[in-house]
Amino acid sequence: MNFLSHYYFESKNQDQYEIMGTVLPDLVKNANKDWNLYPQKNEGLFLADQQLLSILNGWKRHLKVDLLFHSSDFFKTQTAVFKQLLLPILDNSPVRPSFLAHIGVELMLDHLLVVEQKIDTFAFYDNLNSVDDKILKVFLQKCASGNTDRFFNFLYNFKSSRYLLSYNELKNISYALQQICRRLWPHPFTEKATGLLTEQLECYKISVEKEYLSIFNEIDAKLNQ
Image (cartoon, rainbow, N blue to C red; front, top):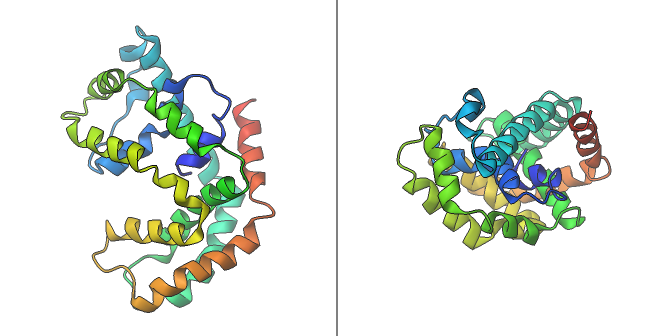
């Protein structure tokens, strides 16, 4: 799941450090794809400080939500549906349809949460902004992350741009997909594919918007068991 979908499960959480933890794995990978951090394997490093422990608990919750999502019938079915819509526009493209379908389904969920006002995106950013960077730096250093300057440069831009507020428009979801693909392939899309991607997102939205909340309800029930 993507940032806002993870936040959906924390929208009533009053602990901003735990909220930060729930999105931190994705923030880390976006900032530095070479980082492989496993704080959940060294929990003892974080027990002495409640704020560090909250970040760890959020991190672990992120991992659990992703596991439940990626193993669900919803995910398997919806990625297959979206992949079929993408195949005709990816001729002569290096982009793997399965990869684009995977990311596309996740971003579509964020889009639907925003447009149907199931979350407060401003509150999401407010929670991130209230986290002390010094505490976050200690957490990352205990994960043996090394130099954290690159991460905090990314985090500053992520928070200041408030780009997720733009997810209310499908053209911005299309743009985000293109940017993600450009990290892996220098020229991911033909001009024709670029023009058609938003159209295919619109078609996919019609097929999923009536049932998308089912996966959130399913995961929420399992988290609270």
